[in-house]
Picture (cartoon, protein in one colour):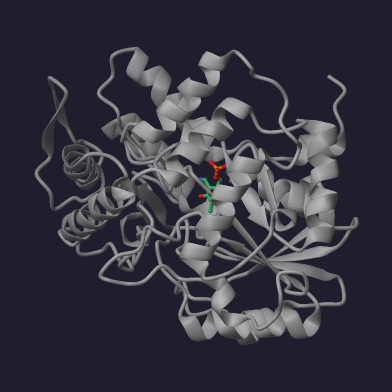
Length: 410
Ligand code: PMP
């Protein structure tokens, strides 16, 4: 079939693909445990449902302005003031169909062909592909010491005259780490001095553990909303576990919002008014759901760390936020099992019916991303199955569903 070179070069979203594989296996009645998926299991908050239902009941479901309904934008302005101590106007806010679209529109708005975007490994799978989709060049910076913490010196040496933006995602998907304040302060100062956009993907900013305060990217700039180089991306997907509602937003200088609005106006027109009403309900409603979700994730983080510690070869940096961790499984790569993370992930799905995401997709080979957004039982059983499949010191039989399985490959 005739398709463009560019389209052909875009990789499938590995997480979306894994979700689909797991769904099909489940449909066939297989006892799959999903440690790949990046979504909590909670139901949408009641005020979100009521907001969407009320709008639906009016029957008046039309286009909204391309940059979002004025009332949702008002709620986002309030959220920004309360959580970031930052006063922005409606001209600084654009609502999109998910944070994913916000980031895409932003990249489309700022990149000329061949412009470079610095992406810090381990990174969210979609960043490099989105940069490529707008003819940009992703420049990956990987910490030399194998840690998940980027170093300013490495970033500085990757910057060229083509660098247009640096993407920062902290708390980080997939590692769960939070970058130190000093690092964020340095990066903001660097970007503003060098005239480079600093894209802060803050989608996990409230899912932070151990008494930490949600980090606020804006606290490190003295510049006004019109002159800052910081663009903040946020949304309701992770904040309220409302992944299917597809509402995200960007906070940016007016000029950029105008361009992004044109882009959106010519592609999707606007985000659905029903879903915008749901997002508004969630933002203005009682916020206890966020704290419940945070506590659930923190508790699960402790469980995942305890379970992984029973596999002495697995090294895992303790997450400080999100619902992911990125353990290093290199000690368990074995010709009878797998020699890289993609094979290991496939092996675990086939033998143990556990979905994981290969570290390679995040620029960290030898690792697997595990999501602990789900239930405790799944988490414990999932890791027990992984252990059975790859750790020769574990007992060599196990029950998976109602089948007793024997490990005969190690
Ligand atoms: N940024 C990061 C780091 C993410 O993990 C995700 C979702 N997995 C998104 C953005 C996209 O969020 P949304 O569902 O609102 O498009």
